[in-house]
Amino acid sequence: MAAHIHQFLCLKDNFGVLVHDPSTRATAAVDAPEAAPILAALAARKWELTDILITHHHYDHVQGIAGLKTKFPRARVIGPAKEAAKIGPLDIAVGEDDHVKTGMLEAKVIEVPGHTSGHVAYWFTREDILFAGDTLFAMGCGRGFEEPPAVLYHSLMKLAALPGETQVYCGHEYSLANARFALTVDPSNALLKARAGEVARQREAGEFTLPTTIAIELATNPFLRADDPAIQAGLGMAGADPAAVFTELRERKNRF
Ligand code: ZN
Ligand code: FE
Image (cartoon, rainbow, N blue to C red; front, side, top):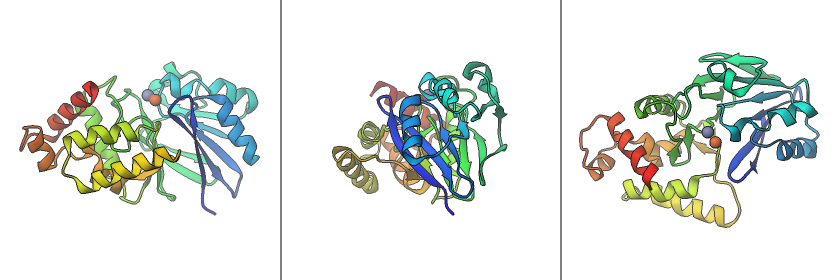
């Protein structure tokens, strides 16, 4: 049986996500932005929390851990070894190429430094589902808080190399603002224009704009398109190193 995924909002614009394995009834929460809505989502489905997969140490991704552990003391907290000191006690500390299991579901850990130095993504290879945290967003990417832009760019290229049909879940619902910025640097991209319209319609209707796919991001996300001649020309950087173009895109987005 396939994995069941349930996505819902926490805090203002953070996503809570539950990954459920129907064959064993194991259930993982991806990040812990807020305990109450995650516990409510579990209770509504009569699912028991077995694992908490942490992508990075920021408060809006870990503050729910204690509340989840109070209700489910046996749930294992899994997170990046490099951020263990900041996240708090981890039951399993992971790094590049480690495999973590939720029931029969298995995720490969991909280190994606940039937004934070120890940030990891979880790729469920058989289901082809990626949990990207705050590294990759729909038509956007996270801010490079703890590493230089070139490091974040390299991490994004690792995710961009996954299969095009990979379903991508992200830490935040930022698509509307990301689309507005993307259009300023890639204004002649017909697929981007169509997607910006679709995202506006979805948000108007109260729908989520995620998951996305790697193929959709490759076609519409300017941060994955730093090698695109039209984007480079628009920035006055024709032929420049894609990492330098990415750096310029990231700085413009910071000011946007
Ligand atoms: Zn963050
Ligand atoms: Fe966040």
